Image 1 (cartoon, rainbow, N blue to C red):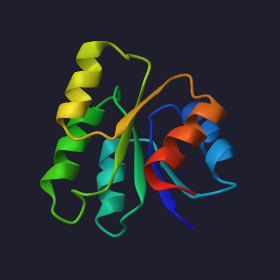
Image 2 (image 1 turned 90 degrees about the horizontal axis):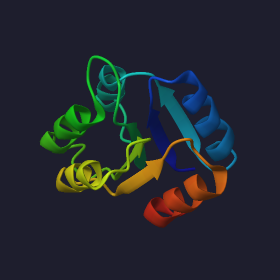
Image 3 (image 1 turned 90 degrees about the vertical axis):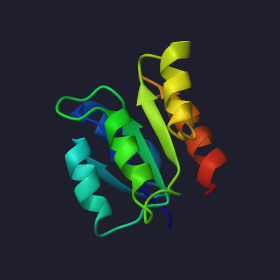
Length: 120
């Protein structure tokens, strides 16, 4: 079973992602970028779903640290955000993001987005 690390400071979003994805994937929910980076020191998931707007460390900074580490650099990352402006999408793409998922998270769109990147 493929593993997805979901990083979001909103518990409702974490719960929704768990409900949508857990029938097919092993889902690891964490509420902060620091916790995500800590998880990565011991585990390498197949995919990271990463919120952009979080307190303390935003998703773009988390992404920079992921890409700077040779062990994590190839993990695909899909950004989660309510801000799908061209500037935000361009910045995420420049950092090596595999795509975006707009919030609120919709089951069909989330499943198809994940499958497009890592399959079932």
